[in-house]
Structures are given as structure tokens and as C-alpha cells.
Image (cartoon, rainbow, N blue to C red; front, side):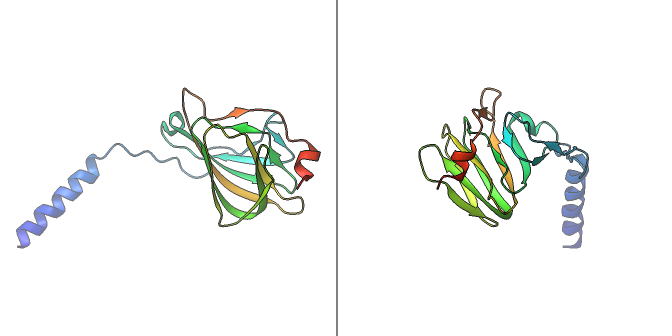
Length: 153
């Protein structure tokens, strides 16, 4: 019995020592970028989350929106998942009323749905945004959300 356990433990160690399919990007190695003015209104700080060649498969970003900040209208070729981690904000599908989102909410946006998301007027909001790549693209950016569109209920 003892030899069986030793052999099993040795094979686990050998497997761990030879595993080379995992890559780690240490925290803080990717600089925070400000959301581009053609894609965001207001102050939005984006921390891209990637390691190895993960960016060829999908886009993951932790986005911190100041009060009133938001994305431009946009779509995603394979959809988008938002995980709200802090604060309160809104998400809106074109032609539909805006909807409140807050810390703990998880939002799925179907492929091709024109939408925007961002912070509420008086509160900041932070979310993890996950979009998958199709034909080298994870988002198709459109026009900025006007103040009138943002303020409309």
C-alpha cells in the first residue's frame, strides 16, 4: 500500500513538473488605460486581463466607470458577459428602456445586439467585461451615447 501511494505521488509530481500549458501574467504587468474618446464618454479606466495568447480568443477587461461615464453604442460578434463588481449603473439595448445593474449582477448580451453600459449619474460602477473573438474582432463600436439618450428613462 505504501509503495502504491509513493508511486501515485511521484506521478503527480512528474505531471506537475512537466506541465507547460499554463502561463501567468503577474498582477500589475499590464498598465491601466483610459477608454478611448471615440468609444467612451466620461472617465473610464480599463485594465485588460490576459495571459499568454488568450487575447486571440477573447477580450476581458475590468472597467471602472466614474459617475456618468459610459460606453458608446456597440455590438459583439459572439455576445458579451458583464459581471458587475462594484457600484451601480445602467445597460441599454437599442430601442428598449435602460435597465439598472448593480454589484453582484451578471448580464448576458446576445451577439449582434446594439447596446451601451456604464455608471449611473451619481454613482461609479465597475464591471468585468468578457467578449469573445470572431474573425479577429470582439466588438464593433458605433456612435457615442448622447446625453439625451443617457438621461432618457
